[in-house]
Image (tube, rainbow over all chains, first blue to last red; front, side, top):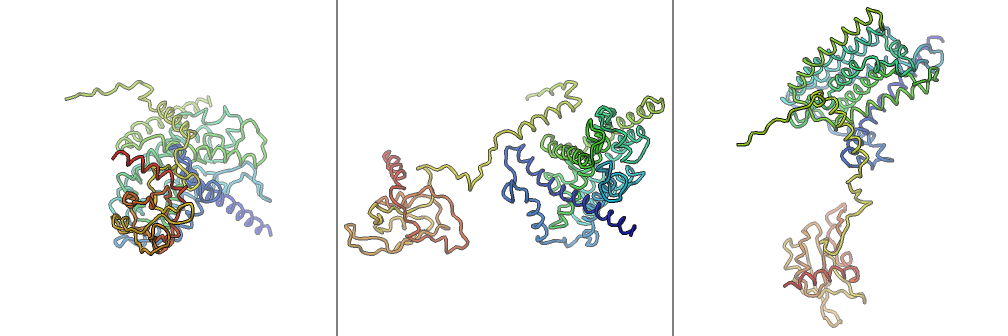
Length: 339
Length: 166
């Protein structure tokens, strides 16, 4: 009986959180189109459902019923599994993100997260690093020059920016002394001045920019930069497999935004309300999350795409030294006991 | 040869970050500007007598058609969109069309039929929308083409005004 309840709680949490994330990913595609339209003085999709709210559903149905093409010269097995390899790690990352300090589920202790790991930072970053495999495989297996070029660029870029991403997180880890996202979130508490965005502004900035590069978003979207590479690594993909790449991309964005919130904005903490009930905490988390999702779209229409050498120079010559210096200074301050 | 001197960047511009902020604020303000897209079916295109829409046949106030089936528009039509069969009538004008078809899929909206017509019977209306599920449905017959002359009056006046120049 005890076991059944435990399994039931786990399944319920899985359903709620994954359902939420996939729905949010679908809504983000709508938001992407809507916000893009507004910035360009357009209306955006507004025909399907009230205000275009059912547009993602219509898109999904369309994707499912489209014909799936596999190029003749493609490596078929790799070609077919690449989209799932791209989407899966992105979704796995959400498992350790804490949405609230107290789980509302029956007989469930600890924070509202699917899994509670002591090394959840490591887990998330490891899965973030894995997601590149789907992109590389997809690009390589398509056997098309544009796909391969896109995949090559994506891998080079992700490796370069993962360094500064992880280094900027490390300064937080050094400060908190824990690799647990829950601890990192609770340490910051509800006092806004205690949040890591105030304590570590440089790390925040580096992390934020690195997440843009990590998720292949503007202004670093070299993996799929349309004017040069047609569609990048997913040029040859069609129907639901293409949609899977998209879903993975948006899930990765959501995970990265959730990480930014957890690392730098106190996670589920409600400003100036220490003992907030769980649903207020979830609401606060989602509000912060949505702001960063909006920022991703907002930046897309503000900054032009970098040149590839500029991207690499920025990554290796500016961000890496800055992140290292930040880590050293933080480490020194922690060693001196000033934090 | 013109040598363009590169603009010397200030420190805040070199740092890039303040400039990003400026750009972000600009795009944010753009979100609340007036939208320029026309929501078409709800907000139809503005039309006036100069609009050269689909050709229509004028019907007099006493419900008689103006066309005398002379066939000039049929000959003037560069796309062979018009088909006319005439018949006799007891009215003073003696002739009227028995059949007057315009294949709307062929029609190129050039207005030659309107120019050719000696009776101001065929006129370019302000109707622009054209959609159906079959080709056959888009061959308009005489009943579908009839419009009261009062509706086409501005167009007639406009055509006369323009032709006064010659």
